[in-house]
Image 1 (cartoon, rainbow over the protein chains, first blue to last red):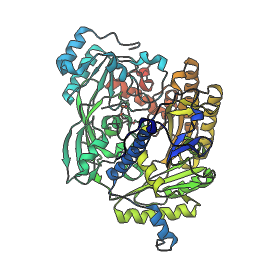
Image 2: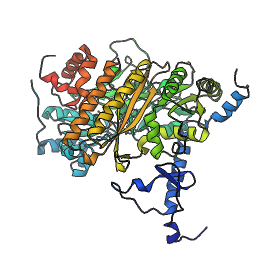
Image 3: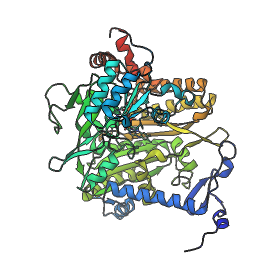
Image 4: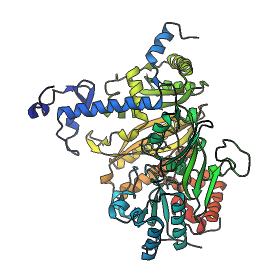
Length: 90
Length: 504
Ligand SMILES: Cc1cc2nc3c(=O)[nH]c(=O)nc-3n(C[C@H](O)[C@H](O)[C@H](O)COP(=O)(O)OP(=O)(O)OC[C@H]3O[C@@H](n4cnc5c(N)ncnc54)[C@H](O)[C@@H]3O)c2cc1C
């Protein structure tokens, strides 16, 4: 476990511009480009752990939803590979 | 007989009668209790919020208590509005003439699970997700699955005749509710179904009253208990998402998927370029997609594992032959799981300058035949473009088209519009109402229905309901007057006050 450092938590990793309207600071977590949020909406101060917590809990929620609806989520990639290999054309 | 205007302030006598019937704890008069039940998630003119606030809220604990409240309201000619989850998007659960909101959330018990006949009987205040947590332990599911699945409730599903994301496989609310008990506007408790039996799925006995008392938006009574059809909890779920370089090839593909006759097919959705552009602004899955992705299709299948895989192969083959690009398991699984709960929609839009502005989500929906989807799409986008030109507080969030049946005959067709509610004034609201009317007119001009899903009670679209239903609307007026002689049940909705003003 690493110690909590206020300064560290309030210094987000540098942003990588992903498109003209979005940036990425943590892997697979995309954010609206802050330049677009300067006139009508105020931005909140967000510690890094909270960003990661929100993304992770969304992931947990989606996992839960799959299990809630069915025992298994079938992989389309596997079926497609079978099709492409000619085994699924029956 | 003419009944107009708002209800009188409720007298001490009415309050005392309600308190006697329910106990004081369940008669709520506070400002918060009343204001919280004066709106739904659909945007509305916030500056007119006060006009929609009820005089009080009651929380009955049994069908008998609901009946007693209705009798008191009927005796005193006080408007009464049934309310369940409050997620309805056509203002059904919002009082137009003050009065009493009957919040049925306390009727949330599971009264019976019949494992042999595959039914359960529940109070109408129960939520489908919560019910399915219990049914899951028995290997069963009640598959009524709106995009408000975690928060809409069985009674509201009946009140709106709801549409389900997996309706192409399991049917919609009208198919899944076998029978229900309801309190008529005079306070009488009856049960309606297909014929008389509580658990009968097909009867030819008498009028088919179940349909009459579904989708009436609380204008004909309050459902208190429902008997539901159950299915085995699916072993497998399959939800592929595909990308296309243009709308036309995606449109052809969705039609072929829907017409393929795959038994486990539970639905297919087509998202147009505007929707893809919208998703690229905020959606984790679509931001990094290459720029040549211009339209999306998803399909979903549920059932036994072997059958889902066999059907899945066929769906994949159809999509592959139609030029689809599979978006991968991560996006496919994640995006489908998120569809059960669209409250996660980002609540912000863009000004014409591209700046983020806080906006609420509104959707206009219609039922449109497959062959008319492209024309409706063009016309709806141009209506919203004209609106945004005049009032930049509106933002076009794109359209999708979702199969309603297992043959691909018609699609829930939806345009999502962001509305900067705080900036709404009377002029912008009037322009919005005109746009809604125009949107509904396009649906009718193309042989569709104004709503597949939410109902058509809101300003604008409601004006065209008599046109849509023709002579059927006159029958609606006659039924309303016969069942609700004092016009107490959700008065003002669907223009039904006409039943009391003119000879229908
Ligand atoms: C994010 C989101 C996604 C949505 N997706 C869908 C979707 O996919 N499919 C769909 O069909 N809808 C959808 N909706 C709309 C809404 O969830 C449905 O209309 C739902 O059926 C309303 O249920 P509720 O319990 O919230 O009812 P409420 O909003 O409380 O009431 C809806 C109507 O039914 C009446 N009513 C309520 N309870 C009763 C009762 N016991 N007896 C008689 N009448 C009653 C009310 O007076 C009102 O007219 C969505 C809404 C949101 C916010």
